[in-house]
Length: 313
Image 1 (tube, rainbow, N blue to C red):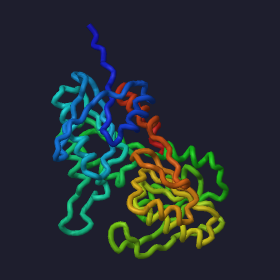
Image 2 (cartoon, rainbow, N blue to C red):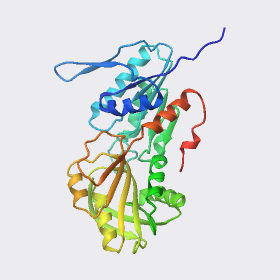
Image 3 (tube, one colour):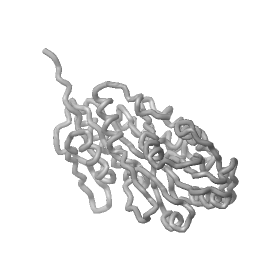
Image 4 (cartoon, rainbow, N blue to C red):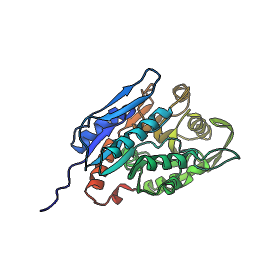
């Protein structure tokens, strides 16, 4: 008697409910029902309102601060494990706390490693995420990690713009590898910004390595938080003779006065994904959905087929 592998079930954390709906629709499934009971002091408890015994489940949720988003993911994984789910895949479009991937000064944590261990301890058997802040975070896990790239979304968009004299730029030295990968795909030049920080989110000095005169520049980064780096880089490049400056960043945190900086800068356009839910407050900001990408990869994972075609760089 043959065993029929049941279809997976898809659930979403509260913060990623809208993206979860899009992913489930693209997958061709209904988003599973889960409710959160809350106590008056803020403590909460997730509850799956349908049987998940023996099934593969996908739990969709970005873990950007506040820490409640991470706690939701951990509690849902634990609940799924105790409900006898067969496979528990944490689908994390944005892997939060990833900027703390190493000790950059004494007596600080490596939060990305801690989060990885917490997810595994909770019961996650696989991780699907996109554009980690540092590639080495994959090595913090003992479980399989599917590290997707938003280049599958951004490259077609950039090619459709048909920009002449295109130049790809990295806003800092750490993103040079990503910039070179984009430049290879787009057959363009590369420039690098060198920045010095006074402290987190505060840039004290920035210099440009390369020539942007007469070029349409595309800044490439994995995330935009306060937008200080991107807007400062855009203004510097326009001063150096660039025709236009756009930015593509996978994760749009857009905290503090980020929108004000974007509006007052020389940036022509900022393209982000919907990995983090946000209320767009500027006409300069364009959002590309990553729902189809994740749905396709989830389908391939469930049916044990290759996902290598999704790695454009």
